[in-house]
Image (cartoon, rainbow, N blue to C red):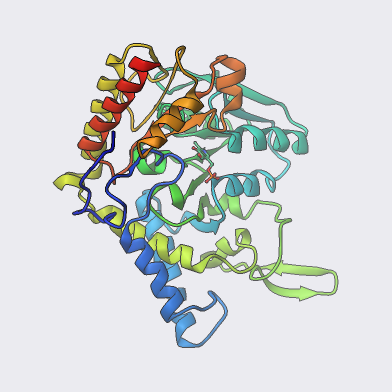
Length: 398
Ligand SMILES: Cc1ncc(COP(=O)(O)O)c(C=O)c1O
């Protein structure tokens, strides 16, 4: 059975119309505008940021400044309070900040449903700082079950949306407020939340936020949004070009211009094409109206359809308790990896395994490998229906 789906009117028309890509939680597809913006940089002003005086570099610097401002406006924060730094990905950003925190905190707090990119660095950071690490439960509604006393002097590191079933950290605002009152800080892994749950992020007074361009229709680049007050407290020990204003035989001075503090987290030359692509991606996200709707409405409709249809298939055990653009399940009748391979034979791309959440899925919940279906703005209702139909057929014969 082969699918044909029509996405030709969209900005993903380069895609073969037989392909049903359902792995946006890993990497979203890139709209043509993002690809074009990156190609334009390579073709027309391939230069280095923050250093050169010739026209290409001046144009690039302007674009970098603009991208930082657009990121801040996207997450609802002001440039007087927050800085934006570019890195490799979410994982890199989390490690960079946790690995340079000053030794003044009493504990690290995280949750059971974190991706390894938070679960593991919180272990190494607790060890480095010689402080305890507390792992709280995330309830099925996504909220963190915590005791206020445990937030005293704490570094709280949590995802704002799970990459297993899309559950959101619905009490983030409350957690942040309690942590701040108790002298703690809050660092948010927004790798998933940045494309589906921006409201929760915008409303919270986080100290640090980490996300990846490749999960929000942008290039493979990481972003850190960090309070300037925390950035200036970091014990910068990962160091090199582009970060100093003076060097002596045995000492150096970091750049101190309050408008250039991001340089403390940007070691050496950056992925300038990536920054340009992210700029284009932020513009694209503002204007893209899939099937004439807002992105949230479109994703909400597809998520509802997907959840309702999957709930009807006998033999599937859904991890989700409600609709979400990210849905995981398993079946006692067929192994998740085999199912993913069968679906791939029909041009349907889904993920199988533990999605870097080994502790929660394998150790705590004792689940077998799962199948994960994640929706993106390139997907259509027809694609969801076709996927469900093919899955039903496979399950009947399993
Ligand atoms: C919730 C969550 N956090 C962190 C990450 C890590 O992102 P990256 O691999 O871009 O560093 C992922 C990736 O899937 C994720 O889903």
